[in-house]
Image (cartoon, rainbow, N blue to C red; front, side):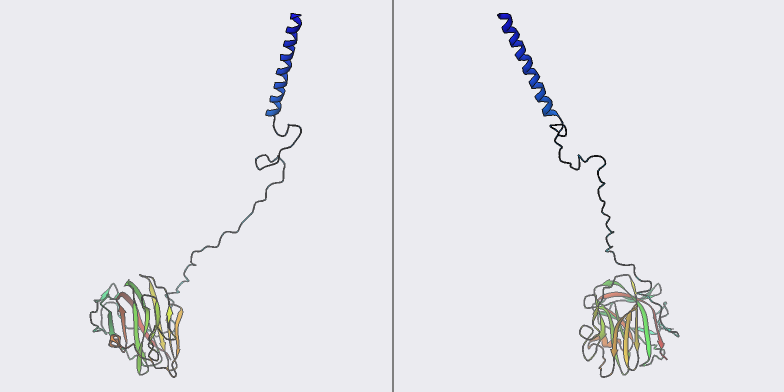
Length: 266
C-alpha cells in the first residue's frame, strides 16, 4: 500500500511539471506561431518582398535671396555723345563753396569731390558753366552716401528762366523727387518716390531739360517725367536758393561725387 501511494504521488508530480513547461513555451512563442494568428504588419515587422515604399520628390524651395543686380543698373553708360566734364578731379577749379550757414568741409580727395556733413546744408556752386543753356541739355554725375541719414545729393539746375533741385535720399534717407513744382517740394508733388540707398555705393544721377519736359533718372530707373506746360518750377524756399543756378549739396550727410558732366541735346 505504501509503495502504491508513493508511485501515485510521483506520477502526479511528473504530470504537473509537464503542464507547466507547455504553458511557458506557449507564453514565450512569437505572435506569428501562437495558434496560427498573424500579428499586424508594422514598419518594423514588414515582411520581405512587400511593395517598396513610395519616395516623394519635392522641388527645391525657391530662393528668397534677391536676384543679382543687373549689370550697370546703378551705373549705366550715358546716352549720347559730346559730354563735357565740369569737375577735373584734382581741384575746385570752376566751382566755389556755397555760403551755407554751418556748412561742413569741402575737399577734393582721390579724384572725388567730397561734401562733409554740416549743421544743415553743405554744397558747391558751378561758376564756370561752359555755356550750359537754359533748355535742351543734360546733366549727369555719380553720387555716393558716405555718412548721415538725409539727402546725399541735391542737384540744382536751370529750367528756362527758373531753377529746381533733384533731391536724392531726403526726408530721412529714402525720398526722391523734384523741388519744387507749383510750390510743392519733393515730398508732396507728382515726382515723389521712395527708394532705398546703400552707403558706400555709387549711383548715377542724370537730368534732362527740354522746352516741354523735365526728366530725371537714378541709374536706369526713371524717377521724374514732368510735362512743363502750365507748371511753375522753382527751388524750395530757403537756404538751398543759394545753390542756384547750378549747384550740388547735401543735408546733414557726407557725400562724394565724380564724373560731373553735361551735354547739349541737339
